[in-house]
Image (cartoon, rainbow, N blue to C red; front, side):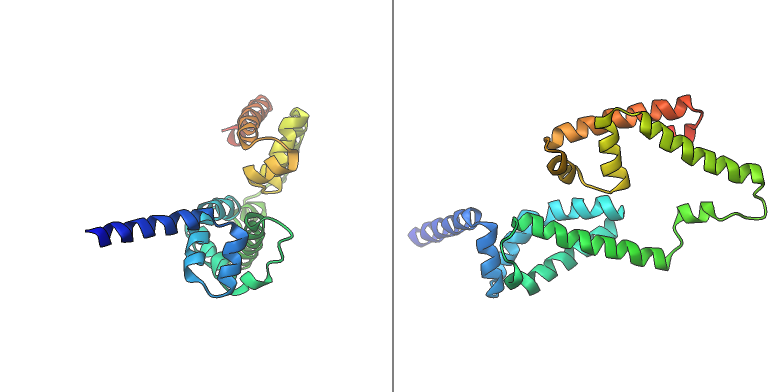
Length: 203
């Protein structure tokens, strides 16, 4: 019985020590081939990396695959980390590169649905083509009517594909504020589009 207590105490101390270990120290251990350190770093950051990638690729299966690739890169290149940024920032930069690369490859493999809609067919009349152009113009005009704070959120999130966390860092506001502004920006934009007669975007 004393042995069991001693083992449990030792295990608890190891867990506490692991939790207290900084990301930088974990990377140093990973560079030395420490698999336990790799496991701890993965557990600490995999959800954030997954959510970040998912916002870009918008496909859960692809996001899961890319998370594995990100941490495989970390395992291989941990010794190259120079500490110029936080480890979490370094991880997201790797994730962003992988996600954007995957998106480019996807565009080569499949014609994007938006591109398909832009290809005129035999059924298209000049009026139909003009309507598409008008709709894009209306959308841009409605975005321009948003308040500067809301327009900034829409541009960063939807046009530049920035995560809530990144937007918060860029603007210098809490993520909760970013989410609140995004909610009201989308509502205001939907109302503007509906008023302009573009219900399919407003929905």
